[in-house]
Image (cartoon, rainbow, N blue to C red; front, side, top):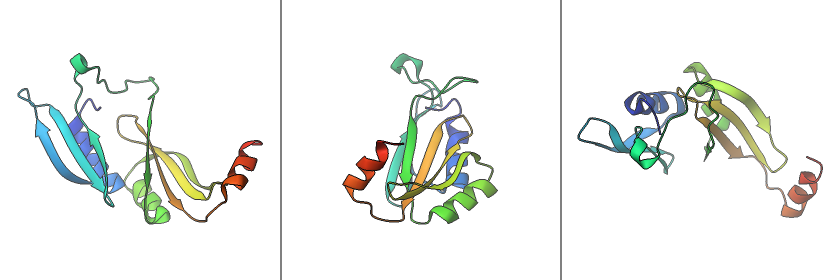
Length: 133
């Protein structure tokens, strides 16, 4: 949910490489629903609709969710996001569970994480490492 959904759609397409798949506008001009696509994966968003309990984060409020996306080339995605002005809150890191990832905030403070599998790690190894994490 975004306070300014049209601006968010433009930003997400430019900075994170999404494409607008479809969008529906309510009678009062708000985005009732928009689908954005990246490498065959879709995210859906809307403008605020208080009557439905949909509110965008404000100021110091902490978002209570994170959008997590797998991408084909994490280094290229990371570099593009940085060049386009994404606020990186956690740079590229190799994870013991076999992923390379980074976290960024979008223009309204939603937290996004992007990752790419870099190696296969047996489940037993991940569970063992989690005990000391």
